Image 1 (cartoon, one colour):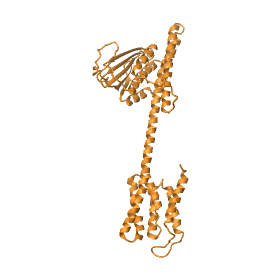
Image 2: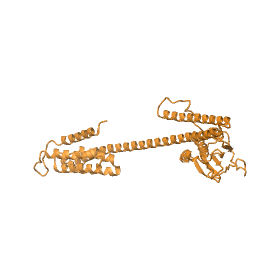
Image 3: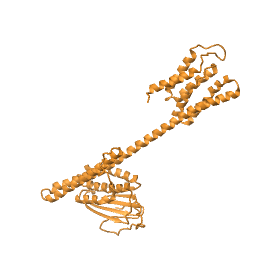
Image 4: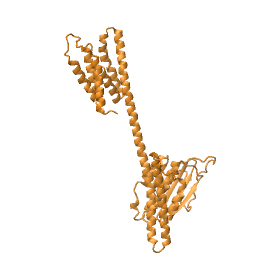
Length: 409
């Protein structure tokens, strides 16, 4: 691609050459007498120099070209400047919408009418004007097409930027969910191991084994995420063994097992006939349980009780994670520094992205996180059973209702 100054110089040279080639060095005036021999070349160069500003001031530049063209058509017999008008008109069509550039094309008819006076016959004058208007219309159309191409390029760039931003947010959520959960579990396990190391070495060893397992699982998830990034970037060196299936609802049991290892009491109950979830919805469900468990470990500590409920209907899965903790407001001392403060915000965005709704809030003695996610009925399984209301005072304490949007503490 040529530098800007080179392309501008070529345009000025071409337009000046075309305009002066139609001059024939004839300085005769309509009203008699002759003009100085330098008048036309000097006026042409001065007028065409204004084309350098056509990108910033397209209307003014076209007005200058039209004024010079009208003055030349009214004064000179053989000099009919045209190239400068066409270049300015194309620039106007590229820089301004049609509602503002089309009047410029219409205005070109005035100097064309003045040019046609030398043809004599009225019919030929009309044909002459029409031909020049077609030429000017072609210049306008080229400028307008360039404008459309610029707008499409700008829209594509905006879409690309939005897609990159969305992907960065998705990766940030994934990293937060993976790292925050793993670090919370590992910190609590190490603290527990230190507390019982002298009195109960076997429990301390079991806690350290859990730390090792959680660390290994987190590393595998991080390697999977990095492998996906390499694949998206066209790098064929990704490890296929760790970039396969992403976490889904089937991985919730493993999360609950890890949470129980920290000392938290965890229970799970399912109502209705399980349906199918899209991969993105399954990942959102997994991350919801993971984030809820992480928040409980951060803020309530290992003395908390967690209840996980899954209520299936033909079209939705209502996923509820509710915790109860003893103490002041259910918050364990010394756990607040583990929080980043962005987990629930990212979780809400993730759930909304897959078409679900999220409700969170404190209860009398804990906190509840509840999401309504879209589900698909299993093929051939018939209509799933309706979700029934659990009997009052059941041991797990979960509340599953036919209106999952309402959270009941």
